[in-house]
Amino acid sequence: TASPISPPLDNAVADSFVFAFDIDGVLVRGGKAIPEAIEAMKVLDGQNEYGVAIPHIFLTNGGGKTEEERCRDLSKQLERDIKVGQFICGHTPMREMAETYGTVLVIGGEGEKCRQVAEGYGFKDVVTPGDIIKHDAATTPFRKLTEQEHANSRERDFSDVTIDAVFVFADSRDWAGDIQIMLDVAMSKGGRLGTRSETFDEGPPFYFSHNDVVWSAAHEHVRLGMGALRRMFEVTFKDITGGQGKLNTHAFGKPQVSTFEFASRLMTQWRSTEHGLAAPPSTVYFVGDTPESDIRGTNAVNEKADNDWYSILVKTGVYQEGTEPAYKPRVTVTNVLDAVNHGLHREM
Ligand code: G3P
Ligand code: MG
Image 1 (cartoon, rainbow, N blue to C red):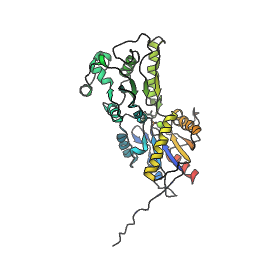
Image 2: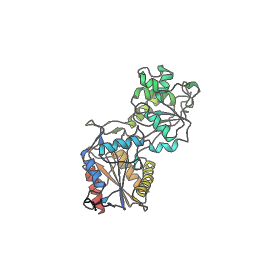
Image 3: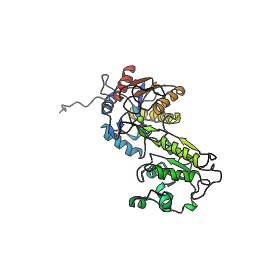
Image 4: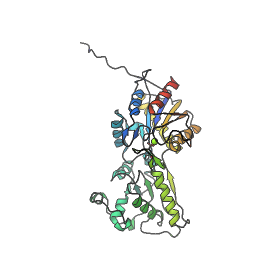
């Protein structure tokens, strides 16, 4: 006998355009979904007047957990399934450097999470600030390891260790201690802890997963981000080396064009495996809240790319209504639901 419930019809899929979303200040604030974001996801999944599903990916500067864990969190917040194949966080592109360096110092995040992320990317020898403090507690006079941190940190003889590169994967949980350790490495002879360079120009490279000075969290005003840590590190280095030293610092994440190009490759892969689409989209709508990262980067990649990267600024995060954004979006809308509808109506 036939079932009274007809199987759901497959949604048609939009093949000429895609959406890419920033997360903090657009979809989420302080760990909670912005209400319109949940509605926006439904529109993307085909609950719109055209019955068309819209391919989309997520591109956040945030990090500190594996991509799998971040996707699980985001799926809960947005009440629908988000897969690793459509997700990039600040440190995701750093995995391409796992083979380049031997021993790396990884900074930021909760507990051992960033070490696990780095090892998951294939970095062979990952040191944390905890390992260094465990070896010599005098390193950070005001930071004592908790019992748990002490147990998790690895015992090793640092007289023998050369730090080949430093990666700031996520926001520091102890700015003073982490900046102290970063300075020790930057001022060392070629990355050997406990040594002091005479010229202060032979430290290893420092990679930050992004450069956002502020970001949008639960508080009504923006909060300090990794870009602020980088500034403090750079200014302090200059002060204590009398301006004679030389630092080697780089930032990944938005607004770097290479990050948007990385996103473009993920998008190609995702559209093909998830939706069976081979031809590239003519328009990529990027929805963000931070002019300096989201809008700047989208506009910059638009200069280079064959397709149209269309920047949309929302008012739910860093950008404040009534101010002049440092980088001008193609359009400014109230929230992410308006952004999705704007793109959809422009296309259909
Ligand atoms: O720490 C994360 C923050 O700087 C920005 O995240 O999602 O707005 O790129 P997002
Ligand atoms: Mg944001």
